[in-house]
Length: 291
Image 1 (cartoon, rainbow, N blue to C red):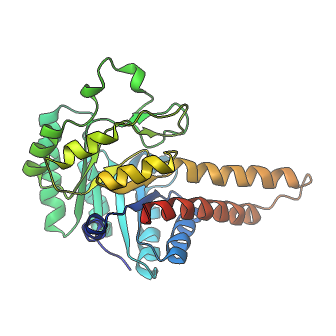
Image 2 (image 1 turned 30 degrees about the vertical axis):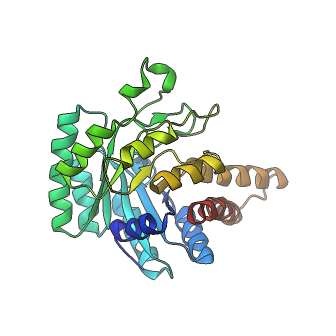
Image 3 (image 1 turned 180 degrees about the vertical axis):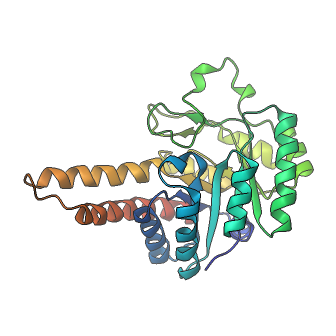
């Protein structure tokens, strides 16, 4: 059942759980996520990240995502993740995506504000929800496919400069009218190379200023305890991709080691990868929906 992001996050916010948002750059990932959501009777978000255009373009994967969402037995939002251009956002809206993220967080605040405000006008006129980002989400050197380069907390002298400022968040949301906000509090795109230092209290500080659903980017690899605290503090959408993708790679690697030379068939590897991703996604969903 295809729904808007706002519908999903409104329920999550009221009932204090989070909806998993999974990047799906191939059919195996789409099938894994939908199967996991249906088995757990859980709402879910299918995402296409603009940086995955090198894997498959939006025009090809988008209609497939929408087809699976419409046929699903659970509510599914179809979302553009980290849209870096107006053209990409408009393309997703025209395809039928029910939400878009316009990411101008690397730009000056006033530019982010003005451009996000314009995207909100366009998207809301079409009944499409909008996510924006304020602050900075670090990017790992390993598997950080969603980010804008490789960096970490050590690259900054003062983390207050990169974590989301509560007062700016209030002004940003009020002026742009975005439906949800991705906030920076220490999470990382990609594989965690060491234990993350999350400022979970910052979520509460921002929540004191504004009453919108918050989004956690770099959700893969966060501890179960930190997931639960983040959700309790106001996170309603958790972006998750790297560890699901890694699970598929590990399953294929193990399967290849069991084959004798010349007897490898891709369809069998595909099924193994799908099953591994589904198992990984279900484990994450169980935490998100029962914090």
